[in-house]
Amino acid sequence: MWDKMLTYIIENHRGKAIGLVLGLIAGILVINYGFWKALFIVMCIIGGFLIGKAVDEQVDFDDWLKRFRGR
Image (cartoon, rainbow, N blue to C red; front, top):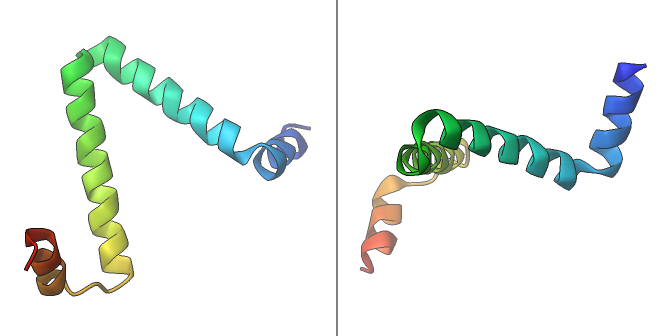
């Protein structure tokens, strides 16, 4: 029963489900650590995601740094 309901939610309401989970995680972080520490944790997660994405896509970091610096 739970697997069918979970499959339905993921297939038909993916954005809402992801938003709900992210909101829950953000709320728990803010309650446990405070706003600024939670914001720092979220920024580290985003940075790690972007670095991992670049590694998966085999991005040349030298070119990326040159574009980041505006050269």
